[in-house]
Image (cartoon, rainbow, N blue to C red):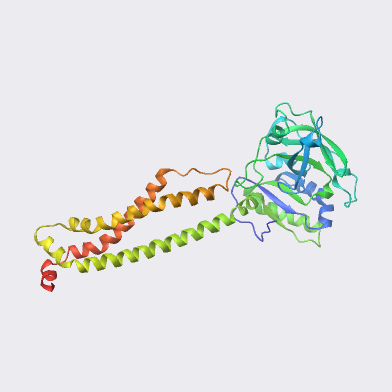
Length: 360
């Protein structure tokens, strides 16, 4: 879980503050802490949860069918404020209701005493289990665990939402009520403009309830953002190596042009004498190199398309590689190469032809 010493730059929009219940004492006091946070105006909604988004998975199947029809559904377990706190949208039915849990034996299977009897599915889970999302509320699903069958009533359907990174498509997931002692996270919706005050208040209440446990917090968007850290590093490294490659290429091209200009100093002088303009001389040198750049791009395009397309396959939601991207790269390459060539040839073309002819 993310831990921050001071809040980062927080936008004015609502934020989901995530408190980590990292000890037995803090888990025991989670419901009390959540109640205290709700009394503060900076907290719009507070929920106890087993995890910020997903805490595990479960085999579920329609109650009128058999285990052979099971589907693996991701789950999060929370209290009744979960849907509101995360801003999920109900498209059918209602939220699950409050249930009392009295079990204190955390060594037993959770299914025995610590799950609610109602369940909320996302649209994808409803479809995968063979239900119409619009009419699924009121139906039942079953779960087989250690030889026992548990049955839960579908009370609501929420609109599909992302609970993993965009590398993965939206899969089936569900939300159920749970014994607060099983929760390891408190998620609170706060006003981003008052994030510092909210964190300070939460810290004070935490220390009052859990003096021997460090206060640990983060933000839900930061948890999501961490999924893309590797992509950011890849982008940074690619940018660095691209710059180095272009710089070395320009140096090499400059060296070739310098050598070519030196070798053709007499020809440049003669052309100047017979009336050639500076632009004519620059284009004379540019043509031979720009042709090579065009050929190099044509060779590189299929490889670039293959590698980029292969990388994008890791994302369920991805941009399409269009022809204009290659056109832009070609144009940029030609522009950089022309600037490098012109840097040397303009100087040579503006020289006194008498000097170069006398030297020859």
